[in-house]
Image (cartoon, rainbow, N blue to C red; front, side, top):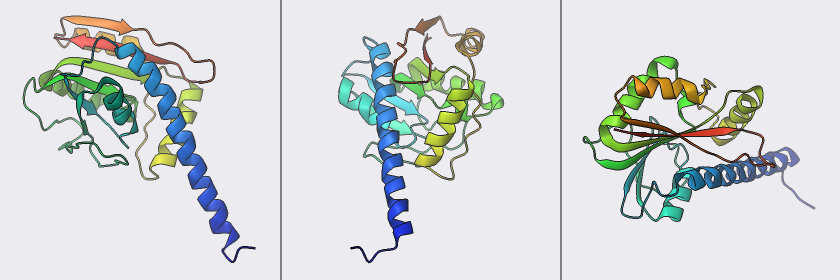
Length: 203
């Protein structure tokens, strides 16, 4: 018999359940993105994760590739122990030109407005030699799942759900002077309802 408040007990169970679902979703997505990044990230590389959020995805990449990785975001949402440098604004990065071998933007661009996309990509191009974009094709399912998972992770997180297709970023990158723009194939998991795409941008 428990003397505790049953409502608090149920709330705690819900929080634990949300946490497990979030971590499982990250693991599935990270496997897809890591597979698409093979040969592009090496142990000797210095990598920046833009919009790193809670840091779980960043940690998965760090553990797999054994690389030197830094996270950055406008707000520190970290729930893992990784090096972190805050962004001065949603369109600025606090790093030197070409400081990173690889800059990653993983499922973060759909959390920003249209007027931010090109400015942020320009900053990624400035600080990195190669830019990797991983995001989600627009659909009702992707918007619903993203909304649920984002608010399970951080209740006050701004989630515009501004999903764009890969063609949108390919067209944008070509106007920005990237010398090479290439799509990265990402497998669709039978047990995972969202459909992702990857892009490799080199200057």
